[in-house]
Image (cartoon, rainbow, N blue to C red; front, side, top):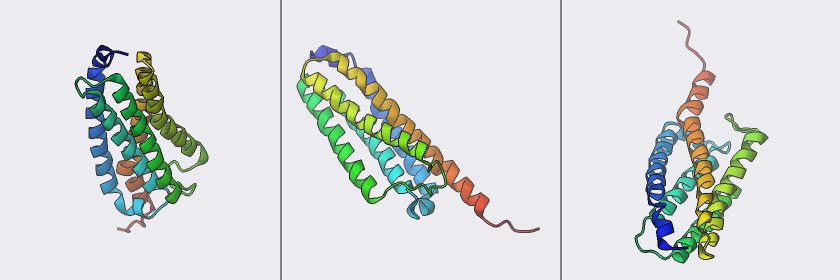
Length: 179
């Protein structure tokens, strides 16, 4: 793989860095709105951590991708370390703060399974892309696209849950005052 192959992806890396930073901010806003409910448990804390760290991973990949003159094997190594580090971090966090089937918003087994698959795919595909880069396979960069889609899905979905669904459901659960 040549440096020109990486240069061809420059706009992609700039875009994912910008989008990831923006979505991380949106997640923080949503978390601020629902902080009391998130801290009560029911797996929301784990979902927030995973969504934020998936965006952090995408931000790092974007930043690493725009470093000028970087040899492909170095970029590949950065992708591997980043993906494995994020996977390790979110796995440890999820172990200590597991999702709960009692979660009021999308807590059933199906949505939890989808989130787990997206989380693993989103962190492991950059690792595979990095391995491909080390072995001179420029097409391996295309694995970053489904990884970014997984991170986007988790982040946008959770931003909605934190900013809209949790407050809406909390409001519906409150006893209404009689006129």
